[in-house]
Length: 281
Image (tube, rainbow, N blue to C red; front, top):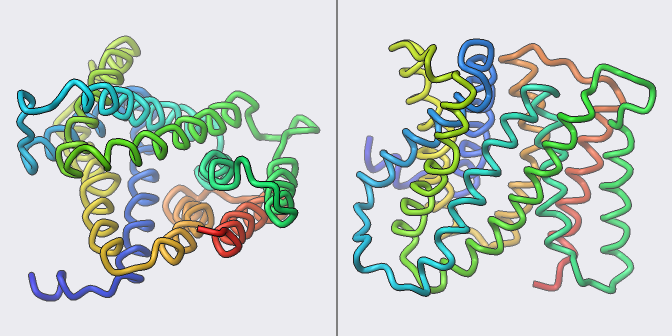
């Protein structure tokens, strides 16, 4: 069984990681009525931090001052991104939240560019957002859309900080210490919301499944794939995430999207994949 896992081709590994993350989001949303979005985020990040700290056992005394200056904001961005994303999917469908969140990394990828084709991708993404905007008081919640876009901004910051910390710190130590600070940020919010007071053994078990599906399993699969795939190919595959989120939400949460909302998802997926294909690096 172990050999099969090691020999898993990189493309299926990335696709399984995407499915794992989106199944985790579906499980998370089922917990919201009982323990709230912040409570669910607290359980997921708290358990993920424990799993990663046990797996990598970072030596906190060996972390330099320069590393602390990056790994702390890296972890705080990670925590804020996940908490705010859960606040978003509590209000709007998962597929649309992931689509809006993707705008952050997309803009980061083409920021500063002066090429006409990159402006086209931005325009296409903007068209996608406009297609799902609640212009006529539809079922979409404006605050939920704002939270999704804000989560995307934190995602972009997380990518920038992740790139910096990866150059000065071991990956395993960076991710485990970062998740520790993410938990420090999010746990007080979960306690303030009083969602954790409703925690039962069943909900805790679901929290463990959520931590595995949303963090441990996809992180492992993506790390294996990154060692074998060109970065551009990996990015194109990750561009499928909004579509995967919509499909998983439809299967597990019965969240139906309108024609225009589906078209919005398609626009952002094409913009993300297109910007990767036409990028210079």
